[in-house]
Image 1 (cartoon, protein in one colour):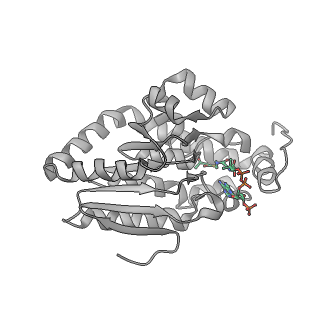
Image 2 (cartoon, protein in one colour):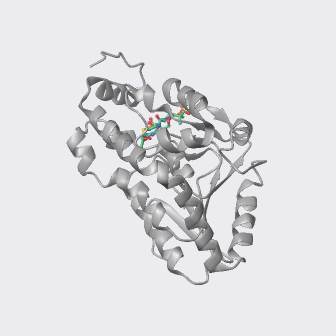
Image 3 (cartoon, rainbow, N blue to C red):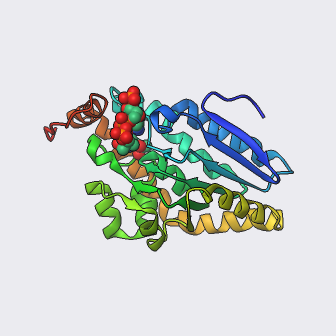
Length: 258
Ligand code: CAA
């Protein structure tokens, strides 16, 4: 495997493990990290010895969302031309199952990335949320569609409109994740699950993943396109600039409604 700047990669039996490595910013997702992640997943996907992948962060954070420093001054046009949001789509090209092993913060784009995986294993400390409203924008990498399909309208509304965060046990009861384990076990359990899947018939595993994904996508495709467009357009508002500046300056934003 290559040397990467923002992730670590490792082979564990038949499982490819990718660990986000930007601990100072709670693994905020910047363009380099997403590019490296998708590159590493594609590399594992191409290796015959690998049957499944796990992506993880550290105990404190899976990922606290998209890196706000990269977006604060962006215009809608710059957002549209950036490869950043489309990079989230690349996970769809991965043919073998990908498991998200989540502990600590799993927010915004971090949560959207986890929801793009095929299974989610969480530690008891995991916290899931979509805080984009606090920045004057909406989720731009799938949450208005994927979260709503998974947890239903009213819970999705509360999370997206009012930054309700949910605990691991709540996420389990909302069908958002597969299992919750103590913090010392969640990664091992995710790797064990990945190894079990990796031991199954490879072509059937890939076919099953593709078919389950397709059952979602019939409804998803148009919604995802509209969500992305709306997200980009919000970068023409003063509220987006104010919300993201206020976060970086560690103060409460003053909303103008314009
Ligand atoms: N982007 C950039 N930097 C981030 C970040 C992010 N998403 N999340 C945390 N950081 C940085 C902070 O700026 C801070 O940096 P400095 O040490 O240089 O000051 C460092 O990480 C530690 O963060 P805090 O001091 O805020 O730590 P905390 O313990 O008080 O709070 C937190 C932790 C609750 C995760 C808080 O950092 C937070 O709310 N982060 C932002 C979460 C967020 O809004 N995510 C959505 C991003 S937009 C998005 O994802 C769009 C999309 O749909 C694609």
